[in-house]
Image: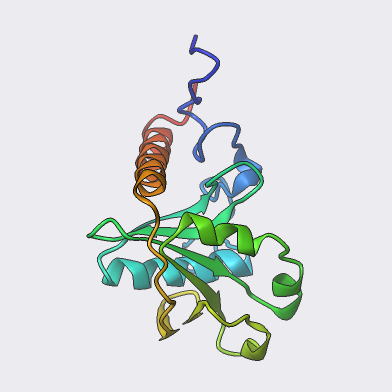
Amino acid sequence: MQPADTPDPHRLFGPGADASDGDILGAGTSGAGLPALAPGQRLARGVCRLMRSLDFATLDEVVPRPGLRVDVMGLGPKGEIWVIECKSSRADFTSDRKWQGYLEWCDRFFWAVPPDFPVDLLPEGAGQIVADDYGAEIVHMAPEHPLAGARRKAMTLRFARMAAWRHLGMRDPGP
């Protein structure tokens, strides 16, 4: 039995998470043998491939604090933290009321959108990434707003622990 404040390592996305929080391991598959993903998840896959090419480690569905869940968080080789919100449509974008809360948890903030997205909807002051299922490209670099040292340390630790929980969950998914 684990202490109450210790997360269950069998939950892939950290404390309190379950399959409805984005677990694609149990999802169906596409015709190509890849997991069947929702539109935002397909954009996230393309974004993660871009980030990997920039030497960033990534996690999707990261909760920096209760009530906020970012689509993709990247941890760069120099400790920089980027947050990327994936918006697959106008309706997806206009329904997001929490995105400004993400700004205090990263050095750079980006919107990732498909090629046909109406980019005039995107607010100024953020970066822009155009993405699809298989890749992405930075169209506009986000301005840098360096995190305070204590916040960076806390987020880096959260990132590392979440990655370890997910790894353990893949290696030992059952009780």
